[in-house]
Structures are given as C-alpha cells and as structure tokens.
Amino acid sequence: MIYDTILAKSFSRYEQKRLGYGAFVSCLLIVLSLCTVFKPYLGPIHHLNPKLFIGVDSKMLMVKDTSSSSQIAKVEEIETKKEEPLCISERSTEFCETGGDIRVHGKSSTVYIVSPKMAMLEDKISWSIKPYARKGDVVALSLVREWSVKAVKMSKKVPECTKNHSIPAVIFSTGGYVGNHFHEFSDIVIPLFLTSRQFNGEVQFIITNNRTWWVSKHTALLKKLSNYEIMAIDRDDEVHCFPKVHVGLKRYHKELSIDPQKYSYSMKDFRDFLRSSYALKRVEAIKIRDGQGGKPRLMILSRKTSRSFTNIDQIAKMAESLDFDVIIKEAEQSLWNFADIVNSCDVLLGVHGAGLTNILFLPENAVFIQVVPYGGSVLNWLATSDFGMPSKDMNIKYLEYKISLEESTLIQQYPPDHMLIKDPPSVAKIGWQAYKSVYLDKQHVKLDVDRFRPTLLKALELLHQ
Image 1 (cartoon, one colour):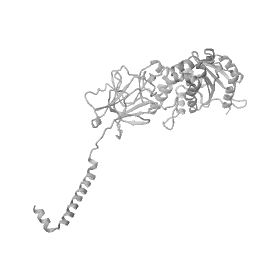
Image 2 (cartoon, helix red, strand yellow):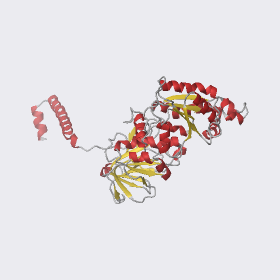
Image 3 (cartoon, one colour):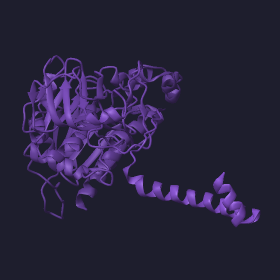
Image 4 (cartoon, helix red, strand yellow):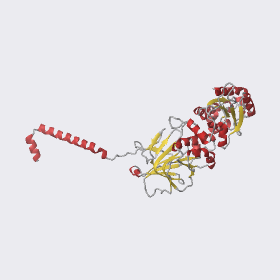
C-alpha cells in the first residue's frame, strides 16, 4: 500500500501504466538472457518415436523388442554413437554393425551390445536379422537361422564373457542356396569379401548354419580373408566377447557385381583377390595377331543332368576347324584345380546355368559365350542379369547365342501346338517351379553348328582386338 501511495503521488495514471509495461518487458528480457546463458548445461530430452522401418540405405537404432521378429522399427532424430548398433537395410541385404562391449552367445543366436548409455533410452532395444545376403527371398531365408541383436544396459541379467577376443568378428550364414555354385559366390563369397577385406585378415569369421563341406570348398578364399580358424557357433554355449561385430554381409544388388562408387572395391579388385587366392598365372587372354600368338584355347563347359549339349563332339570339331585349341570339361567340386584350368582358357562356352559362375577365373579380355536355352523372355532376362551384365564388370567380352526351337529337345517331348512350346511366358505366370521344371530341368541343347559358327568367328575377332 505504501508503494502505491508513493507512485500515485509521484506519477500520473498514464505514467504508471508505462512503467508497468516497461517492467514486464524487462522481466521477459532477463528470463530470455538466463535461458541463453544456461542452455548448454541443460540436458537434452529425447523423444522416441518408433515407426515401421522401410527404406533403402537407411540407418537406424534398434527399438523396443516386439513379439513379431519381422517388425523392424527405427528411432528418428537420434545421433548414432559407438555403443549403439547401426543397422542398415538395403535392396538385397540387411546387416548390423556394432562396436564397444559386444557379447556373442551362439546357442541362443544372440548378440548383446552392453552400453551404460542405454539407461537414457530403453532397457532393451533389438533387431532380428537373418545373416544371408538375399533379402526378400522367402525360400532362401527359410533355410537361415535368425539372430537377435540386442542393445542392453549393464545388469546382472547380461551374460558374462567366458572368452575374450581382441579382433572384430563377422557373423554370416552358409544356409540359403548353398550348394548352388552361382549363389555361393553371389550371396556369400563376394559379400564376405566386401564386408571383411577392410580388416586385412585380422577378423574372426563366425558361421551359423555351418556346412563343413562349404568351408572346405572355399578354404583358399576364407584363409585369404581371415588369419583365424572359422568358428561354428550354433551349439556353442560360451559367451564370446569382441570389440566389434558385423552381423550379416554387405552386398551390391546386382548379381556377381560390385559397385565401385558405393564400395571401396570393384570387381577388378575381387578378381585380383581370386587370382591371388588360387595362385592363377594368367592375367590377360591371348591377343591374336597375324601369324602370331598361337591358338586360342576354348573350353566347352559340359553338363550331365540338364541343359547339356547333345552334340558336343560335333561342336568341338567345328571349333577346331576354326583353329581353336578345344577342351571339354565339367565343373569340379575342387576349385583349386578347376580355377586353374579355366584361367588357362581364352574363350568359355556353356549353356546357362550355375557352372558359368566360373567365368570369374577367366583372364582379362577373355571371351564368354552364353548359350541361352528356349524359354522366352524369362530365360533371356535370367541370362542377361545373372551372367551377361556381370561379365562386362569383370572386363570379359560377352557374346550371347539364343537357340532356336529346333535346337531344343523340348520339341521331342511336346507337340508344336502345346502351351509349353507356343507360350513360355504363360508358364512363367503359373509359378517359378512350374517354369523351371520344364525349361531348365527337362531341356537339352543340340546346337546347329552352321548357325552357331558366326558366333565363334566373332569370338576370334574379339581376340584380335
């Protein structure tokens, strides 16, 4: 009251109002100044907004575990730190990179990322992943064991380390389509190279769905990538601790290919790696010059079960008449021996199939001739995407020969007006198994040597260049 009396005597009513407004504005300015000064000391408030994960080349943190292993979510607007799992989903693969206190328990298929910073987020965030690089292929992934990557805060429930390792680890599966030579390279070997080459051998390979014969088959490559014995872990009850773990493999979405703009390596680097692994001698194919260079060597890749040449001797005789040195070989289980034989050749000829994956061992500038069986647009697309386009990335000269209906043994099995003869695309619409059973499993090839002759002449012309 005393202050009101003093103000009333000293200032008019209008002046009193002006003073009140001024005091109010001054208080606001003081509050804003204090907020600015003390802002750096105020801790951030994280708002977790789980959403269903969708996308290509997306980076995310794990989110709260759910009952559905297929539900993948991301936490937005949170900076990824060293202790937090970085999981990436791309067009053809999913993988997680982890660093810090990492504990791997094989028997439960679990990777624990122990972080004291988890207390700021959730008690447990996780990701379910099948470490096989063929995302979206239901058949392949049904044969792959699922793993959980869990970021947890330190507690008595976290399993204690029983074995400590000082090097990073890579976890991958030899399930899926293992047994098919093409898929072994496209789904595992090339992705494993992309993922682990950076470690220069100082990396521990951990295999789930272990196939001992697969390890034996690819021993030369595996030993070149890792200096340590492979760990088969599915039944292992030990808790292995690593400073870093990579669950799953990187992969370029094209078959048998690497995008040098996306990765630090190219198909040239991978083929150099193969030559080093198998001690292959030839880097370049023969260059034919007038009267010089000797005979180019042609391998005719034979098959026993399906898509075999029924007149392979006739094909060889015609090729020899064009001055090729011809060998006829079937793909072997032993890659050491077969890689060396393929590397000795300048031209490889074969019908579409997994055995053509051996073009990886051809020298630079060699010629690859793919014979495409009868089967319409589907087989044409498979031939191009599986081997035609990849061969160009390998610096191999590519020729394609599409057989006519008269060169297919299907005309001996079905009448000319049968749907399987007249309309292959309609069979493809029924389903892959129906299509495969006819055009890949039941078909053989009898090459018209006169019609095929110009293709071999073109191969000779390419070797002159």
